[in-house]
Amino acid sequence: MSMVAFGTVISYGLVSGSALPLLLAGPAAFPAYVAAALVVLALMAGLSRLAAQYPTPGAFGSYAECTLGPATGFLVRAAYLASLILIIGTEVSLLVPVLAAWLPQASPVWLLAGVLAMLTLVNMAGAHAFARCEVALSMLKVGALIALIGLAFHYATQGTSTPAPSSSALTSVFGAVPFTNVWQAFMLATLGFVGIESLAIVAAETRSSGQGLRRTLRITTFAVVGLTLAAVAAASALLDSGVNSLSRPLFATLLDLARLPWSNTLFRVLVLVTILSVLNSQIYCASRMLFSLARAGQAPARLGRSSRRGPVRAVAVTGGLSIAVLGVNAGLPGDAYVVATSIAISGLLFVWLAIFLTHARRDLGRDAIFLRSSMQSRLRAVPAIVGAVVVVAIAGSTLVIDEFAATLHIGLPFLLLLWLGYAGFTFLSRSTRSTGRASAMADRLSAPFQAE
Image 1 (cartoon, rainbow, N blue to C red):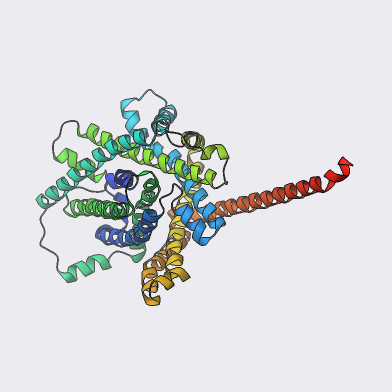
Image 2 (cartoon, helix red, strand yellow; image 1 turned 60 degrees about the vertical axis):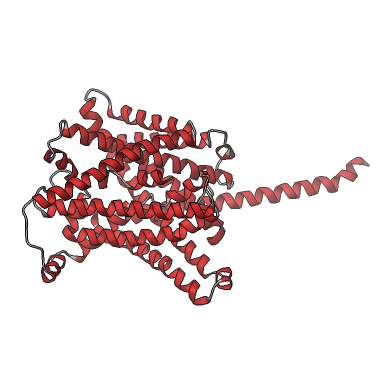
C-alpha cells in the first residue's frame, strides 16, 4: 500500500529535478512545495480516517455518494476514472526518448502499446502480482532518488561557496520573484501530489485492522511528503550552488558529476522505472474505480464481477481504453494532449474538492456535533474548508495562466456531460421501473378476467 503512494506521486517531474517550478519561482519554489504539502496533509488527515473506518474500492467516490449525494458520488468516480485513463494514455509517451535510444528502428506507438499491454497483464494476474511488481519498481525508484538527493546536497556544498544569506538578503530574493510565478509553482507542486489519494483505494485490499490501517496511511503520507520536499530542496540547493543549470535534468547531471559509468543509461533506467511504476499504480486505481462504478449500477454489471484474481474484466477494459487514448494521442498529438490534460486536471481538482467537502460535511453534520462539542467539530472542519477554498482558487487561476487556459474551458463541459449522462440514465431507469411496475399491476388485474 505504501509503495502505491510512492508509485503515483514520485513521477518523472520530480525525478527530473522539478525544473519547471524552479524555473518559475527560483528559490521560492521550495516554500511553494511546503504550502502544497500542508494542503496534502489536510486532505489525507480526513481521508485516512474514513479509509480506516470504511475500506472500499470506491473510496472517496463512495464517501462522496453517502455524504454529498448519489450524483456527486457518480461524478467523483467517473471523473477520477476518466482522468487516470487519459493520464495513462498520454504520460506513457514520456518513455519515447528512452525507448528510442535503445530501439531506434522500432515504432514508438507499438512499443508504448506493448508497455501498456504488459502492465495490464500484470494487473490482470491479481492484486498480489500487482503488489509485487509495484513494490519492486517503487523500491528501486525511491532508493535511487534518495541516493540522488544525497549526491545533490554533497555537490551543492562543493560548488561555488557563498556566505550564508542574511534575513534581508532572503527577503530581497523572495521579493524579486513575482507572486504570480510563486503561485504557479504552488499550483504545479499541488498537482504533483495528485495520486496520494490512491492510498484510500488500496486500503480496501489490505489485511490490516482499522487502527493499523489509519497509522499506515498517515505514516506513508508523511514519508511521501518528506521525500518530495527533500528532492525539491536538493534540486534547489544544487541549482543555487551554480553546479548545474536548468538546461538539462538536474539529477542527470549528478550521475555525470559522480563519474559513474554509463551515466546516461543509468538515468534512462531510472526514468523507465519511474514511469512504469506510475503507470502500474494508475492502472490499478482506475480499474478499482471502474469496478466500483459497476457495483454501484453505474457501469455494465459484468465489470463489477470479481474472481480470485480480482476485477479482471475491469482491469482489461481500463488497459484497453488507455491504449485507445494512446492511439488518439499519436494520431492527433497536439490537440489530443491539450484535451486530455485539461480534462484530467479539471477532473482531479474536482475529486480533491469533493474529498474536502466530504470531510467538512461530516465534521459539521448533526452526528458529529452530537458526538463532540460544537466548537471541536467546527475546528476539525477548518482544514477541509481551507483546502476546498485552495482547490477552487487553483481551478480559477487556470483561466488567467496561458499554459492552463484551456483547462476549465474543456474540463467543465466534460463534467457537465457526465452529469447530464447520469441524469439521463437515472431518468430512464426510473421510467423503466415505473413501466415495469405498471405492466406487472396490469397483468395481475387482468388475470381473473382472462381466467374467466
